[in-house]
Image (cartoon, rainbow, N blue to C red; front, side):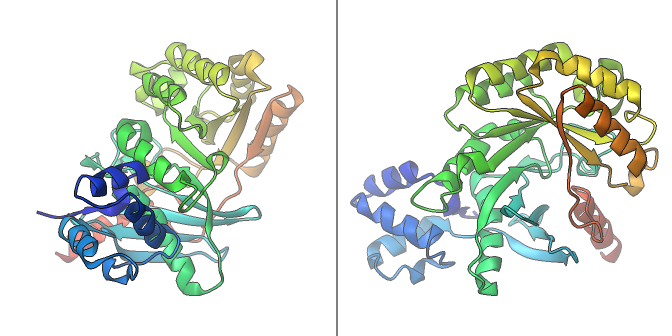
Length: 356
């Protein structure tokens, strides 16, 4: 039986786990410090923790459960990691460099069942959720990479926008956020963490009622039900009539703005009439919402979709801005590598299958 990663324990659970086995509470602080500040990769490196505790931890846990399988580095400094899990599954994690710091995009599931028709992540159906330790492990793998470079850099921002629907793995997502926020460890600020959902309305309400208090982004991608259902099958179950009230609930209960993600697909959802419909849909939420326009990264398996031209993107942006909508065009990262989410994983799986 494979041992779980100790990264999956929040501080409170680690403290309780050790206390139930006869160890004083300060041991949890010691272990936590070694994991997230000194960042050891082996329990034996925890030199001020007694042998009995080290043995106990070694018997029940491992520290890291991810192995680096492939690494692609872009000319702009973006690094895409393909990690292999203990069961042989592959997941993607991306390190991006911004003026404001270093951001990591993490994956929450092996595969995805949401089935957006333009997305590489959904090419392979979900086989399982990632554990909290496997999600935290992605941040730690990237941070260890930075530590080895010796430049003193640290992960400052996290986006949960990788493979999978985060709210379909809500409990493990919550543990992950608690761990990386903890001021005794990585101390990544709540305002520097963003979770993206395809629009699971009930989970959005649960997320709002939780004490996670991090940012929310919603993958909208279309301004009406007919078009959204065509490109995002989730809209059949959760149409805009259910999604928009969940957005309103989040806005009314938090002191946060919301990001509406909108991927631009040539001649599909990028025309002026679509921009005007989007403006109408946003309505009086315009002061609390930002539209993030995303240039499309073409995927071989979804050849029916093409990237919108630069002039079309700018025209869409200008229409929104002229009507008072806060919006931006996402800065692209890693365009010279497998940039689309899930693209590197699906290519590597096909390659490995051929070689077998």
